[in-house]
Image 1 (cartoon, rainbow, N blue to C red):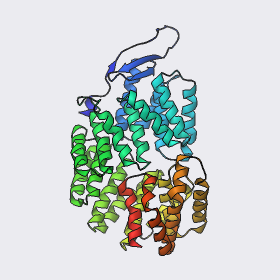
Image 2: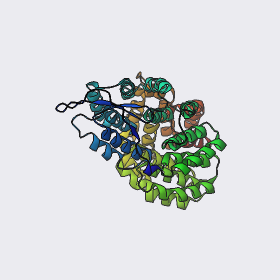
Image 3: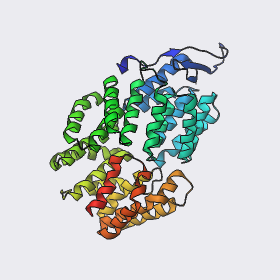
Length: 426
């Protein structure tokens, strides 16, 4: 089982040990990946953090921060913290990323670690394509670098390039031993890439195998959730969730997204009372954490229910109160569009104007997401406002014009389905 096989370390010390001065050393793990560390125990601690991250445990950052209390912590622990903070997709967290980068500029690094720092710097500068190219080139030399694989997997996901998402893992999978304790996590990533590439049959085969190897792997379970969603297999999806949730009881906020998936299965069966129950029990309370994915879950589900004529009561108002301050976020167009939905529905004109102006400014920037805002984001924002205001002809015409480019905002096909549904409904 996964929890029984944490970190296997092969000592390969380079450098001289001194009794009075702390010297950073290089240690290779059993996959031949070199790390700059104070001692081998530090690398073992780091792999415990990786274990927690891979199963989406809520104490992952606490474990990592404990590691970073050392006077001179290992560089990859610092870099990994920067990666995790950036994955939070919250511009208010950017100073924390910069602190990581500042520490890394003066740290003792090996060549592999320098690539990670360069990728983190590019991502921090919102030059996502640069970060992707750097990590993909690096993986040609280090296909067993699990951190690089996971980070670039995340980056590909938010470019909407399903083929790249799939190829990135598939092209390295053959380098991994099936006996490796982390092999199942690669299968989970591969399953998701296959699903997003509409290879549903193979995605299910690979995803089931991944979950057999590591039932606590929420991302592998998530790949399976998408397979059921995209094939309209509502009962299979509900049964799958009921079976898997007990394995994920220690999970972080990502579990609320899994409840969103289960709600969509019931939505597909027109069991709207169950959908509302899931919303009230799981999705609504999560909003207090002010995490981007929770808002995306809630906004997209409420709008779907609106289209079915379900009474929403004060739920839009509650979501509005918690999301209106995020309409000028400039991390991901995908997220900021969802932040706009509640203000548009409750008709807060001041916030709507602020959001639309933000998108106009954003589209002028020479950043990855600035290009997305220019290509499709600003138009989708206006369509959301138009549909909420009852200007259906204009909103639908905009959605039709942009339909081929909506994937550029990233996220999954299931998440972006809302924009297709809006066009069809209105």
